[in-house]
Length: 453
Ligand code: GUN
Ligand code: FE
Image (cartoon, rainbow, N blue to C red; front, side, top):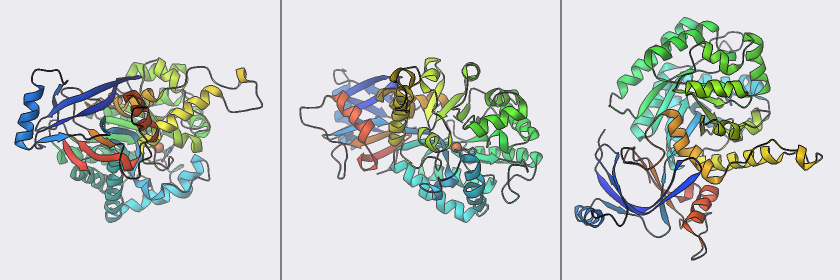
């Protein structure tokens, strides 16, 4: 796919290295016809003035105004597209009840591709307006509806990894919503991968297929084995839920006498391109295994408040240099915004460290380890997610995709207040991470294409 090349001049914030904000003051970004960053020049560079005046003459210059800043696009590392109609409700029961009572009946409706198209078009518009330039999606068991989601992402220009969900165990999945058997689940996944790859044959495809066993409890051994073989054959991404709650963790350990992460590895499902949602209850050995295989974790702090019974040991995972990013987990999480995701990650981490029970003495109240910083939270939502997915996005670098947000701190209905003379650029960045919302997102680019404005 090609776009019109253009030049953008403005101040950008990004966190290419975890925990470290880099401010690119008044930089010039040259975007090529492939939507990639071709050059990044600081104001003192000998070519800066001529590039800028050439672009102005050609009518291809975008200049950020007062109070406007450039940010890398946000990466949602775990989201259930079919649960969009349920976002913000049905959170009154534990995970294993919620699946059977609300979620499987809703997801079953996507047998109707017309319904799927209607919901998915609204979802993708909303996510783009909230600054999500890349999403790793669970769709449903239905091949046609899952392909429809990929088609909508392609049409609207969102970078997306889409999975047809596999759930074939008749003991855990209702008759109205499951794969007929392991063989058809694996055959349908193969058909889905081939059809999706045929939709976008570019050298750097915008949409890609993902092998998606829902989680071990909903899959038979034969399906897990077949999907592990497909992961090896196609080398595509893999996603699943891992050790999310007490129930989910215990279910797997009773079935295999192994942890969730070790069991997934036994089936060939832990690869460099695997993303494990949640993983709240992984132990040190699981972390070492995930790190060794190069897999990543999608931390979903808001959803965890409802379903997980615990907080993900984020600092321990970061100390091991595991791949970690942030997921909204719609509709287990009720916000489509990864700015909210950053805030929930910050409060989860701070709460884990301080502890919660006021009846305990301060020294016995919390878990050890430093809470994350706002720079680390933003890294999780951008460069961390990109590294986990192994995609060239998430920070500004020559050769990276131009996936970016124009943040307008002076927008109507802005909750970001920047005081003249009172705030440094570092302060402005912190205020954006803690207070920016949809109202502040003036424009969104994916691969150089304007996808929301
Ligand atoms: N585990 C299996 N399926 C799901 C799901 O849809 N949401 C969450 N949060 N956990 C799951
Ligand atoms: Fe989930």
